[in-house]
Image 1 (spheres, rainbow, N blue to C red):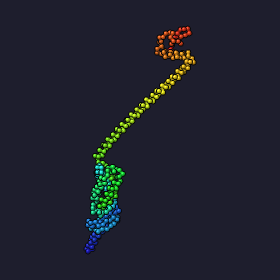
Image 2 (cartoon, helix red, strand yellow):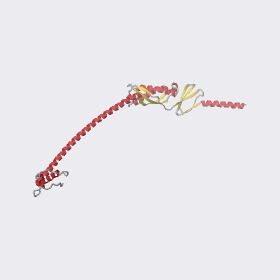
Image 3 (cartoon, rainbow, N blue to C red):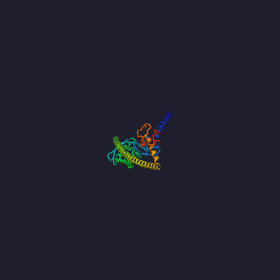
Image 4 (cartoon, rainbow, N blue to C red):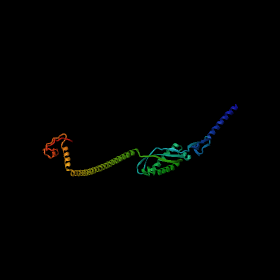
Length: 298
């Protein structure tokens, strides 16, 4: 009986010792860091990975991330110095630099993200309120990002967070402004298109007028050249006729008479009413004094 009681007591002691031993150790991973609390009060920060010890029951460990975390707050509408509104969508990369301050100020990541959203949005509003809208879209943007990162980091240090980077992903105008700008741009493009069409029509008219003028000049010069060539040809023809007439005047008269016969005696109508002794029939007179019968021998 005593032996059984001893075994039960020994088992209970071993269980108690096991629970105490289990509650006395904790493990920190490479991507983690821990904050040891005694009855809810922070005692020490553990950042080294491995096996660590703590007081059982009275101490517990809050595990926090050591890695860089991303936070994408909702987009906010800000007003630039030129009174124009912008919809800014930014994201933040941060890490928990001081677990003790982090635990005392925000306690967990959910509250930390809420505080961080307020800090980021207020800093963006403050920085962009000092510049005009074109500065946000120009090369000054990098300087603005540095100012925003510095401002967010100075506020985030108060809650134990170290800001790695703050970036503006997108900057847009509000929807109603975008629609108004789109309509204005469309009107400007239509006006520009009309001006270009008008200029093109004017240029086309000038080109047509110039082409018509050149056509008229070319035709006039061509006609002039043709008349000159025709006159020169007629002169050459008349000279040849004159030379032929001087060589044999009788033959030339005979040749011209044949040409006259050919034109006068149309194959469709060969009737002529002339005096028999007319000069037109000079070469139709035979040697006996009579008149030969006129025939069409073309």
